[in-house]
Length: 227
Ligand code: DER
Image (cartoon, rainbow, N blue to C red; front, top):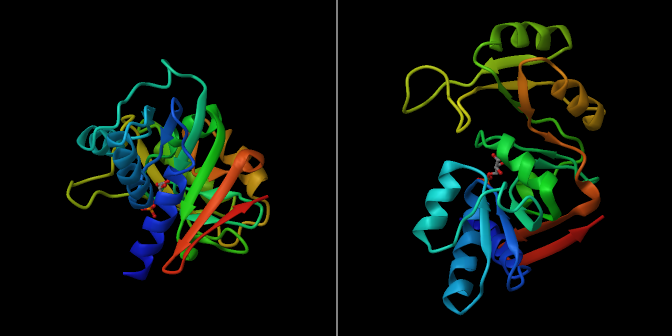
């Protein structure tokens, strides 16, 4: 599909930004998968990197294609993180978490000197208005859901598809997908949601824009956007 071609273009372009010897944050999702595919090819040509995965899925895929892995505690400073997004606004504020990996993704983004977001054009939006995935302690999801309703949210506990009951994250928590309609002030909402007791990580990424580059791929190639 054109979207898959775009994701591949963006992923490959991001992978070509990686220099020898780098510690590389490996995000989660189908677009990053293309970046990993290109990194694996470059490793076979002699590139030496250390990958820091953001989910079990990414770690499994990285091992499968020969990308050497380590942990964030081994490498607390990451040279370049490559990740996807659900939505990107013109100021490079993001909604992430469709893959329920936003907790480790946010830690890797925080530790990275630069963040490369790879996306197809469908992710670009003037105003963030997608649901915000919120990782929440399973011991506190009911009061968190109640509170989200009082601040205008429409919270839904994420149910598994090939698993009965709620989705359980790689960190052993649950996920609430919360709609807020059009988000007027993403930074304020990020800070607000992140401060709720019981919330582990919300999927608004609003504090990394200055170190972010967005690579948008479509069937004609890709554009590299900087702020
Ligand atoms: O869950 C995530 O944060 C992923 O990065 C997601 O937002 C993007 O996944 P995709 O590249 O498969 O669209």
